[in-house]
Image (cartoon, rainbow, N blue to C red; front, top):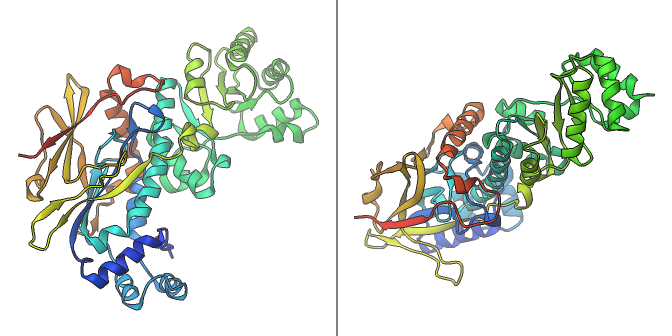
Length: 441
């Protein structure tokens, strides 16, 4: 039985629900929006990730017997609220940016429409998933751009919490990584997995040669041998003596990588192993990868940096009420006005404005009403950014599972081609394109 995701939420979501049920506002139609005010770390673009995971978790957002018992025993909410939660099913509509899409400050990444009671309880779950996964995907995309055509593997599971590690592998794959070391990510989403041996394998044996011979016998000459347990030059010589010039690859996990990689390449070529590939895996991030662009490196393995968002482990997204229906049935735009935390009220439609296939701006059309944007699909010179994920409670399964993950990856690699050249730089700067708000006619 799949566990419920309903208690992966903050208590105040349910206490607000209780109060709304008491005062009669629980059934009031509302529009909530998930967005960010600024990009973390002065980055030039963000990458949406986690939508497919969120939709799967939404399927399991049910208050069953165990969840209700906990809420009752802990005196979280009253009996009337417990009865409401027992029957809870999200019956609203969710639309937003496709997974893998780029986003910018103010982009309406996710819009949740429904009653207050329907939508408010999803805040914590939506933010926890998209904040984490989008942070990982944004860092991974920057690394993928820095790597160019050279393949990247995610191998950071041991540097993250267990469930976060699996999610991080998926987010990195969507943003351009080609494989992961995490087997659960491979099982759950069909991501290619990789891995051969750690330093412990070499240390287990009486000699480095014994370790290499045993690995070759088990995995064949196409494997990759880790050559830096002791002396790298001696390790390379031993690897080729044992495996022959057809050895698939060597891995380097220490040292001044540009210098070491050049020396290893020269040594391999001198030994006749011109086809043996060099993989480096030592504390890499996007800056280190970029610094290796001119080095004879064939592939990268990234651990800590990618699963922690390369220093920015959250996308800083927020979930705000932006419109509600008034007592007279008319729609009212609402927004927080606090200093430095103001938001933009109103229901929104978003478009990427392009010129010759290059992104120029993020145009967000804002409506004080509801019907005006109901059928918005096009904008002059723009690409519509939002799709429907949940239609009156019915979840579109195309974003979930292996197929959804592969589709998100393909979408990201496609839309990344729209970025202007200035977006590809790694230095801190303003967003690559401006966000422009336009009032609906």
